[in-house]
Length: 338
Image 1 (cartoon, rainbow, N blue to C red):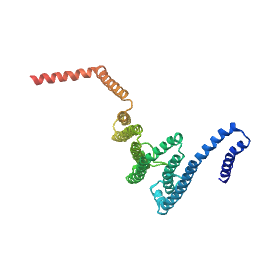
Image 2 (cartoon, rainbow, N blue to C red; image 1 turned 120 degrees about the vertical axis):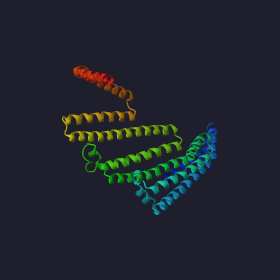
Image 3 (cartoon, helix red, strand yellow; image 1 turned 90 degrees about the horizontal axis):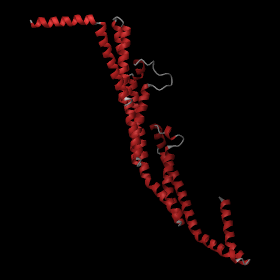
Image 4 (spheres, rainbow, N blue to C red; image 1 turned 90 degrees about the vertical axis):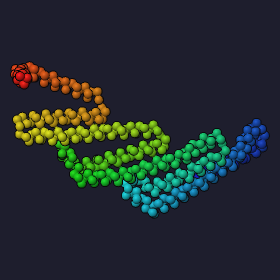
């Protein structure tokens, strides 16, 4: 800093003595432009000094207020509170007190920069920059409200996710994979099904909070996009739940048929399982909104094939049996009439 100040003083002194040197050398052709330049520089120098003084004092005050706010918040336990609610993993190395102090620093420094630019009195340069800083300063309430919504949603989401995880763990939800026939429980160090559900609840809460935050910031298109994504994700999750229920019912039906001890129980159990899985898969895909026309066409063809197969089996393979049965029905009708 001292070298920069020394260089500035050097060139300023040289600029002040340059007209006198040109006058002594009787170089009038160069004296006029140089004198005009010196006059402009000297006329602009007070504005520059005023702007520099405003920025320097504002920066000094902003730094002092930042340190006071950061230390005060750290002393009252804001950092410990952030650790309890789980904000430490989000903030990383930055503490909550330091982040709030930085926000105060920026809020103080922006008006200082606006005042410094206005002190320069260069409308062509300062007006666009001042407008930009004013727009940023005007957007701070919306940014603060959006950030507050996200922070509150994250804290509430962590609490709700923890409650749901503990509740599902207590009712034995971690054994859901074994009950559905998808293997044993999670391995060592892996997430349990209860933790996965709790994490999904946290993500859902944060998505709803993101929608509200983007609306507060005026990003309507982004909010609509997130809303559509949430709706699609809800359909996918509901479809997976339907398929999981179908898988459970398929396994239950197969075990029941096998336990009955009937002839060809293994084949009948396999047929029951496949039928229920196909039905559950079709219902799940339709709930997800994936390939509705293909599913309708596939079921129409399947039912048509079953009907044709039954007709052929009864009409060709059981022709004599069908004839006897129809003759018995005809004789029964005649006896009733007589």
